[in-house]
Image 1: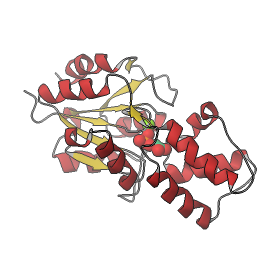
Image 2 (image 1 turned 180 degrees about the horizontal axis):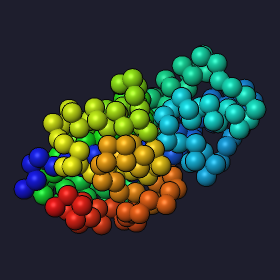
Image 3 (image 1 turned 90 degrees about the horizontal axis):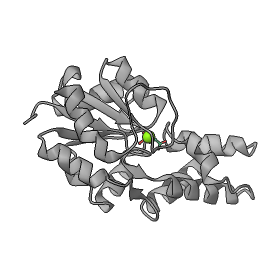
Image 4 (image 1 turned 60 degrees about the vertical axis):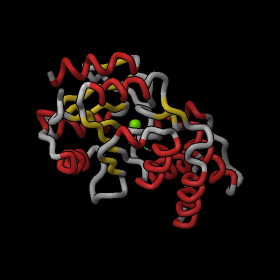
Length: 214
Ligand SMILES: O=C(O)COP(=O)(O)O
Ligand SMILES: [Mg+2]
C-alpha cells in the first residue's frame, strides 16, 4: 500500500473532455456580440489558464475584449452547462480505481473555477476518488505558480517526493517542476509540450505512477 503517496491530477484535458462545453459557452458569449463561432480545434489551445483567460483569448481572436458583464454571464452560463457534453476521457474511471486500489491518495489541482470543477466531478461520478480539490479561484495562486500545487500537497499532508502531477498542459509541467515534483504529461488533452514522461492511454497511468513513486 502507498498510504503516504499521492497522485495530483489536472482536470480539463486530463480527466475530462470538457472542450465541447467550454467552446459552447465561449461561442454563446461571442454570439451576444454577433461574433464567432470559433471551432473547437481553435478553442483547445486557449484552455489551460482558467475560464476568464479562455474568455479573453476567445474575444481577442475576434478583435474584442470582454467586459465585466460578459465575464459574469459567461461564468454563470458555463457553470449551468458544465456537464451537458463533458465526459471522462476513455479509461479514466478504471485508472483512478486502480490507483486507489494500490493505496494512492488522489487530488485535483485545476485552474477551472472550483464550483464548476466540483460540479462536473460530482455529475460524472468522479468526486469520491479525490481527497482534495483546489480550483484556480480558490487560492491567490494558480498554475503555473507552484504554490497552487503546494496548497494541494499541504491539504493532503504529502511531501513533494511522495507525489506525482499528471496533466495535459505546459502549466502543469511547470507547476510540478517548480516544486521538483515528478510529472506525467498526457497526450490526449489540449496542450502540447516536449515533456519527457508521457502517456498516450489512461490504462498506462497506474504502472507509470508505480515506477516514478515506487
Ligand atoms: O479550464 C482551464 O482553462 C484549465 O483547467 P485545468 O487546469 O483543469 O486544465
Ligand atoms: Mg488541463
